Figure 1: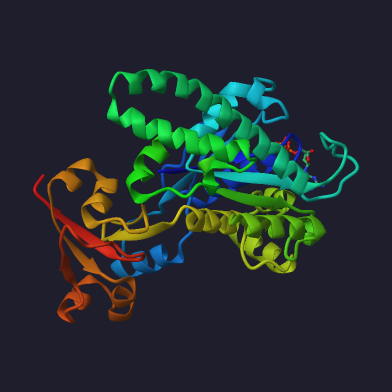
Figure 2: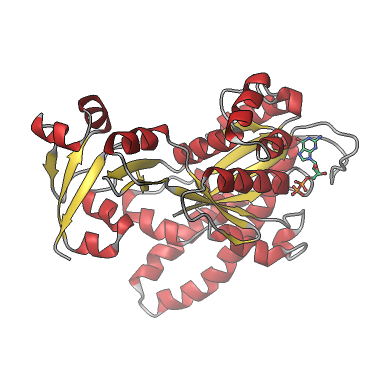
Amino acid sequence: GFKMGIVGLPNVGKSTLFNALTRTAAAQAANFPFCTIEPNVGEVAVPDARLDTLAGIANSKSVIPTRMTFVDIAGLVKGASKGEGLGNQFLANIRETDAIAHVLRCFEDGDVTHVDGRVDPVADAETIETELMLADLESIEKRLQNIIRKVRGGDKDAVQQQRLLETAKEALENGQPARTVEVDDDDVKAWKMLQLLTTKPVLYVCNVGEAEASEGNQHSAAVAAMAAAQGNSHVIISAQIEEEISQLDDDEAVMFLEEMGLAEAGLDRLIKAGYELLHLETYFTCGPKEARAWTIKEGTLAPQAAGVIHGDFEKGFIRAETIAYDDYVSLGGEQAAKEAGKMRAEGKGYVVKDGDVLHFLHSN
Ligand code: GDP
């Protein structure tokens, strides 16, 4: 599955948000095996109304949403790259994530101490980014020493790695995160393998006061401008409201959101933003036993999409019987879609589309 790391300076609302997310998810997901893997790791059901529609049509016994993992990565402080705070452990945790949700304090509250004594989310973002850039530089220097030895020994992959590491180093030394480097198609794979922290896409989470959750405030506006200039995205959330919502049942939560002038819970917006950031899509499998959603990257071919369900499905892939979501719903199910000629047999070269209802035929 895909993993978002929640980072931010101390006291910005990370734990409040993380606890709210996982508690809401646990409550919503009574019918699927929810798990909090570790105290700071939670799997969250991805909300998708289409799944319930499909399950209704197919009369499915169980409904299983797809999931996204959130990791609360505490311990980032100024000096983390030098091993202060939780230092290296913290950096190792970030390395394993697909994207970073960077929580920024955008609320004013004299009772909650700010580590630098003032509310300035843009400066906070720079503080964290600087630590990540320093950590990248340090790991690049270490790796270059080994790689130069391998290059001398005639290792071709090492030549490519050395070139990429030096490009990244140059960007970082100029104060630019590694994500600003443009990489040729031939280098994309090796570039990803470098696992640099500042190549991860960033979603800024503006934690605003309760009264500002729908419109934001001047701090979140400053973050929005920064995010746009960097090509990153942002969402406006009140961690406190999310915490309150997480203690309500579904009907109460809907009423509460209306009262606050909010169209959607922050959890839903955060996950949607994460989906966009990571270029993720959802396809469905659907029958009387179970309706289920699965996550893939945009552009995934049918065999690899099958592989998300089981490795054997990918290895023994024959074809994917495919019905577009709209056809499935407007015609009223698999049988009707088939009779109307809307079930396609797609082969190995088929690029799965968001919303496809798939049935894989395989030789395993
Ligand atoms: P972390 O260190 O980033 O994990 O921050 P916490 O989630 O522990 O929050 C630090 C403090 O800020 C706690 O006392 C929270 O109750 C408070 N807090 C979090 N979000 C908000 C908010 O949106 N508004 C206000 N006023 N306080 C908040």
